[in-house]
Amino acid sequence: MLLLMFLILHLYLQVLVTASSSSSEEDGSSERDDGEHSKGSSHQHQWGYHDQERWLSAFEHCRGKSQSPINIDTRKVFYEPRLPAIQLEGYDLTGSPALTLFNNGHTLQLSLPSSMRIVTGFDHVYVAAQLHFHWGTTADPGSEHTVDKVHFPAEIHVVHYNSKYANLIEAASKADGLAVLGGFIGIGLHENDNYEKILSALKDISKEESNTEIPGFNVRHLLPNSLEGFYRYAGSLTTPPCFQTVSWTLFNDSIRVSRRQLAALEDSLKTEHNKLLSKNFRAPQLLHGRKVLTSFRTASTTGKAREAPRLETHGSGVMKTSGAKWHILAITFGVLFAVTLLVFSMYTYRQKKKYSKFKKDSKQNVIYKPAAKDTDPTSVTVT
Ligand SMILES: [Zn+2]
Image (cartoon, rainbow, N blue to C red; front, side, top):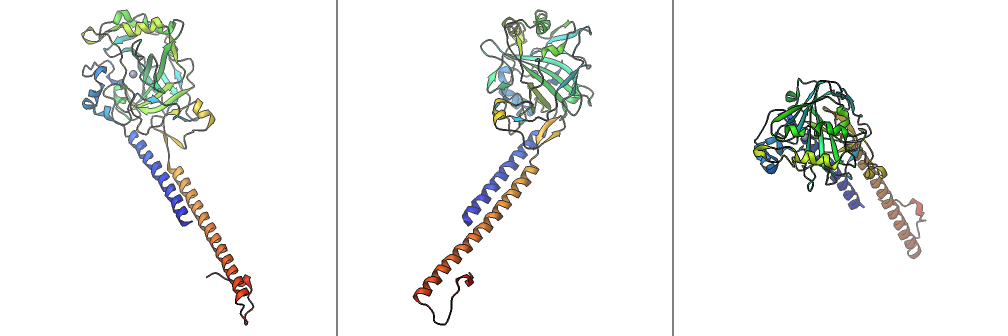
């Protein structure tokens, strides 16, 4: 019995140790450094997508433990109903001044006015700066994030910075500096008129470092119809210098463009030495204990609740698991259980001993009945 109790206590201790080690990984992931797609219009030739291994030696933050993109394993996400909905403001730029579309050699980028904002969804308002795309080839789909290891053909990133900072460059190096909205782009049967507003201009910027102006339009229409369902996690820029300052929101609903439109994105732009600008996506990075939250129930969260235990908002609005209360509960239950077992086993032991003594005495009474004593079995005490 004592051995059983020891085993149970050992088991509880192991659970506690596991829980605290995962908390410290989370703390590690929150030790953020400096700065995103902060390169903005500043062009960096020192890196390319063909040698992503070299990023690790050339850019220290790329070796961090909160890197992006990641694979989203839908069996391991945590449903968090308290994630605030994303609400956008000023995204309709119809009739607004023209927007600059830019081939920076790494991606196709559209500059956005500061009137575009995420007004709810985070602790602060986040101001839009630019949007850009990642894509592959027909044979090699090029979204950066993957869902259950599957790539979408392309991905859009709308980059915002925290309004408490002066601009994107300043915010990019701050822990709560950036919020990027990501949308997966798939192939549909019809032309997407909203994407055509950008894609029809690609012929004018096929050359690296060239730009053009396109009329203002409703940028909201570049994102999925529904913004309700999304994944949220703490990550980084997906390009050097890989600053770990991005609160990522990846929408569950996807965007559709026609096969012809996707081909236009894949085949129009050139990078250095007149090479095709293609496959501009970084490989998925390790989670290192980070948690991916969802604002919606997935197939795997519907049946058995996988809600995150306790959550608190942390800086950029990225939710962090708080293990403290969980620890206290585990310890309390562990101790209670152990005490109950101890009392029960002592009681059982006493009863057993009492019974065997009684039997022994009874037998003695029969065989060697003492002459001088009237034995009352109930008066027998165990010492
Ligand atoms: Zn990006």
